[in-house]
Amino acid sequence: MTWIKLDDQFFAHPKIRAAGATAVLLHLAGLTYCGRYKTDGRVPKSAVTLIAVEAFAKPGAVTRLVDVGLWHDLGDEFEIHDFLDYNPSKAEVDSRRDSKRIAGAIGAAKRWGNSTHSSCQDNGNAPVPSRPVPCVPSVRARSLGTRISDEFVVTDEMVAWVEADCPTVHWQSQTEAWVDWAKSTPGAKARKTDWVRAWKNAMRRKRDEART
Image 1 (cartoon, rainbow, N blue to C red):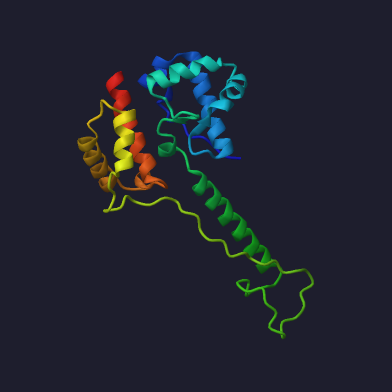
Image 2 (cartoon, helix red, strand yellow):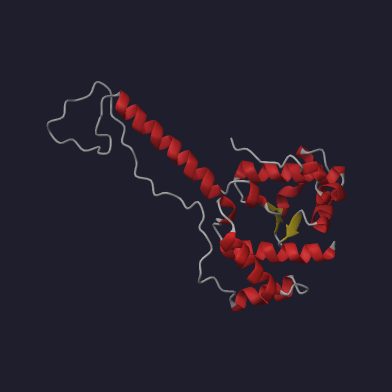
């Protein structure tokens, strides 16, 4: 089971108030969908009707969510605005579960008398335990995200995307300000698993702010 984080000022946010009750129900159901299936804030368009039914909302309310900037239309799917700024990514959730599983296996190994739980090989001298000693798997840690690199650049492909998707945004100056923010912000908020996607989200936010 995963959990979704909501700010205690959630219902006072201008976008929430502008969306209306039905759209907010759909938004909340979308958040829980992303948490349940670990989609990193992505909602397939094919799932919107089912999500709306769960929330006693109308699928058409998704149009309102896009209009107020709570969801972004990416073609075959929607992306919930700033989802990863407040909720853990799939990589983070999986890493935490792996850590708990490994810690449990190590604890079990200690309880069963295997003080050298780091190895599962029989050295020929060890006594046969009364219960089988579990092997603790070597699991490669999943990325929890990284800080933005000094070598981050906007590629030709990214320029083509922003000029087509966010034509009103002066992406050069906005990118410069965004990179400064990323480098100066401490903690998990400035760690991303996909910096290109994070940049695109930042450009979309500027586009949506200009519309409101």
